[in-house]
Length: 376
View 1 (cartoon, helix red, strand yellow):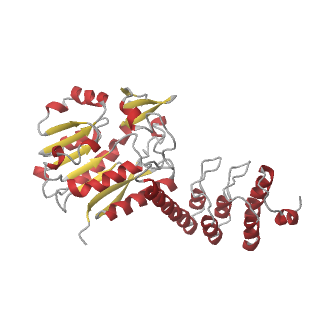
View 2 (view 1 turned 30 degrees about the vertical axis):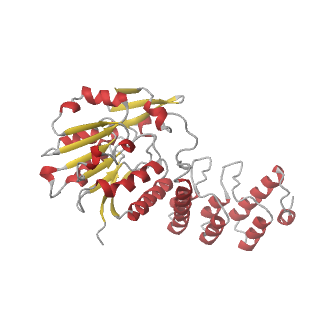
View 3 (view 1 turned 120 degrees about the vertical axis):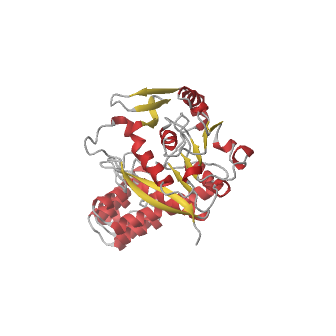
């Protein structure tokens, strides 16, 4: 069919016509047709969400390839899917990033932030889920209830790192891995360095995992005067007993989920914590947001510091950027200021050293959040 015939075609709702218009829309953008022509194709019913058969690119991908910021903004306003991935698992934002096109990248990122903030607001009360990261996942990786009844395996992998695995569907996934040690060391340093109350610290950690961050808290020049650990999984609790945490001075272990304790006497009677950290498994961003809202009640003073494992969306640079910004906005809403520190997580000596244990965190650096009360 000639271009003029396609341009005059209006969608009749059939699959063939939708595909024809979708392909024509993408090709027209890649061919740098006029914006008016593009608008006419869309007005005639071309599906903006369509991704072509060969590469899986969408109209938004095409706009990023030709570096047309105004068109990218228009497509997003018309309902383009900001986080659609092509057959190489690249979003349109990734394409823009690869071309050093900061303008288009920021347009797509900001659209993602708006979209996910709206989703969070709509689903916060009725249906807490995160479309980007948790989509109908009923395995131990996506359901906290399933995870807490699943058996865990503590071992060393082929690289010699400590690992904690859980079976999730037909694959075994990492609950916590030894490669995270560098992140945890930097986290404890930023949380505790130059703290004026260093000799009488009250620390709360939610989620023990392999015990990496708790061992670092215990290894401080002066161990915390009070070190509370909230952990719900029975296998992890048994692991803690084997490591002697139940017998350590100043350590108090609360067996259960953080939702069971943060409003209860066990936590409130402490009078606030100097340092709070959380790193849970099989919870989504909605759960983390709810944890944020508890912070004003559990931080001891304006000097108190808070951090969390910032791993949401870490399989893609755009997703990671979006969730980092969303977390900052929500923390600001409750009066916390965030400082971000980049931590390199790719060892120079052997970038492939950790193998499949790094599949859930594939961006090259970790953005470490350190939060304090905003006194302005």
